[in-house]
Image (cartoon, rainbow, N blue to C red; front, side, top):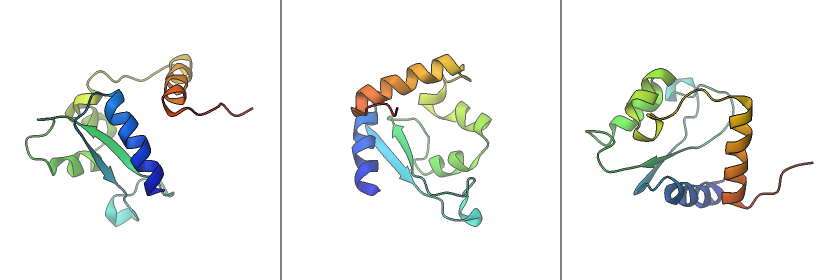
Length: 102
């Protein structure tokens, strides 16, 4: 899983023109896990995106609305239509060279 996360992180870092990455896993509700399955948050980072670097962890724990306000990459993010999500998935599929499932 970590090998895949690193590969995807490198691709996303280049795609979003970021300078670094933050990888996080929350395992269990006291650790901030909001969905009961394993996943890795891969957050492309840019210089100055947070005043204090570790504030990213507080931001990840906050509601989606507050997270969108703090993350530089999410400032342009808005709820997307189904058509837009399909287009975005296609762009990431090309980036990751993944064939769509039949």
